[in-house]
Image: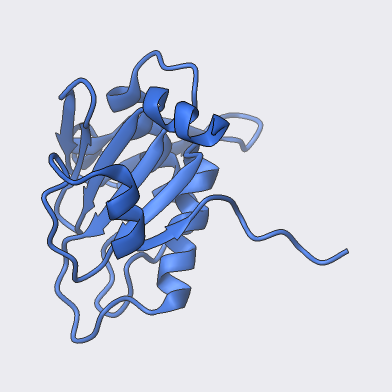
Length: 167
C-alpha cells in the first residue's frame, strides 16, 4: 500500500541513451534534457578529479570522455557514465524529495538484446546515480506516456534495489 502511494508521488524519468545523445524526460512535468553524453575532467593540485563540463560544453575540451561509446557493449567507463546520469537526473527531476524511478532505453542497435549483465549494470548505474527503482526497456516499444506503471513493470526488466552481498 505504501509503495503504491510512494510511486504516485515519485518522479518517473524516461531516459534514452546512445553513444550520440542522452535524453531524459520527466514524465510528470514534461521537463526534457537532451545533450551529448560527454564529460570533461581535470585534476586539482591535490590530484582530485573535478568536472569541467558535461554535455556539448565538454566537447570543447580535448580530454572529453564519452562513456557510452564502445563498439560491443553499452558503456566502457562506468564512473563517467554515473556522473553524467547523476547530472541529468538533477536536471530533469529538479526539486523532488523522493528518489526518481528511472525508465531506461538503450537506443543503439546491437545484434542481440541486452544480456542480464548489461541490464544489471544499468540498474546499478542508475541506483548509484540516485534512482530508487530502474526499469530497462530492451526491445520493448511501449508508449511510456499512456501505459500504466504496473503494466510497464510487468513488461520490462525491473530492479528495485541493488543486489545485496551475502554476509
